[in-house]
Image (cartoon, rainbow, N blue to C red; front, side):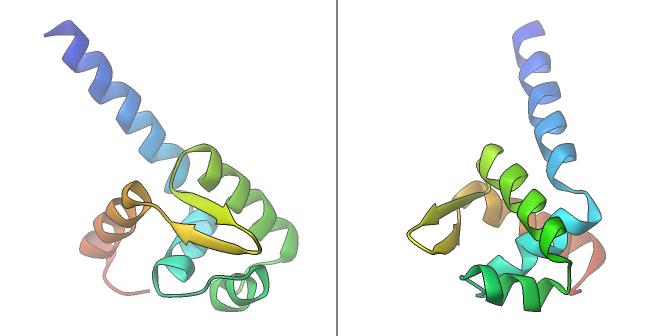
Length: 91
């Protein structure tokens, strides 16, 4: 039981690191089909430094992977994006 609670706490902390406004905008841009850095920057309407920072966190948390010059959403990232959209609607 304690191990299960600790696992939930770790997952909630991971989720909390992702669901910051700029990171969500970047994640949703990728979820909706943006792949290259330029496409993500345009779709998220975020400054370059913000996009770079968000992509770094999203990659570290396993929500996004980089393949060549394209970013792809992972299954975990898709779940986070869908959870956000289910709460706040389409942004």
